[in-house]
Image (cartoon, rainbow, N blue to C red):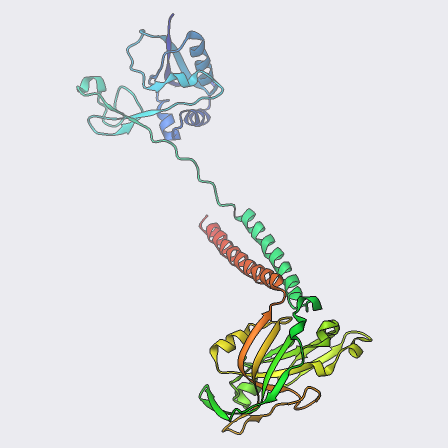
Length: 399
């Protein structure tokens, strides 16, 4: 059975446009257009491989369709050494060659295969040492651009979703749970007993305070409102009074206010001195017992008690133990304490120097976790979105 090989003539077919032919040949051979153009320099370039007559004709037809001249030779007919793989042209609809280059043994110039050096003009066969073939480097796949627009749209959706969830969970996390959530057996009247403790002094922020105990005091209650007295914008405590031991005020309820659910029908609000209580509807105020509510000014300079106190949130059931007390310092500040749960108005708040504080039931833990997670997610997504925005802007400037 006879076998055949192909040889590029080095010429364009009549009517072929050189630029288009070079581009098509470069795509088929996976070369640059400059390298592909070197094969159309008017000199023949044999292709490696032995084909059947039918396959050879199919490969030639594929080359001629792109405007490149091609000859079919029976194996053994010419003397030209093949330099390209002809087998790749078996299927003319998918031209795919592995092209090679060669280095001149005289001037070391790298160039497409041929018989004569394109730079120094020597004839390779007469030089005495054959040219060194070199395989063309594999074409690197084109890097895909980063999808800024798609990722940006996804992040924007995450930000909006997280913000909506944050607003919803912020409202839910401060809702007062139903009565059956609490350990109502503990929610009795506060325990107030005579004390044998003597006046003592404590120091905070360079101020020495004198504490005058009035009674030993223990309270179990549900937090319905609170005020942080140690924040910098509370100028009464920090600037006017120099009161650095009143860390927080907690307004709490107990007894029938909790067991009957009456505390959930009321609204609460704390200011620097007072816990304000209002009815949300007709009949709710009548069911609410004002002597089962107290606003407590809580004093401490102990860091562990302070941390526990600051972790209390709306709806939590808490237990505190300490001294109902008066306190003062040398700059003229002084504050007393109520010793009765039935008084109202000015002076009706309890001032308690804390010796222990704990949260016995933590309310709305799921919603608080959702709130923290959604806020964190929104901030993280917004940060990444900002970085991507400036990254795309910088890329646009470079382009």
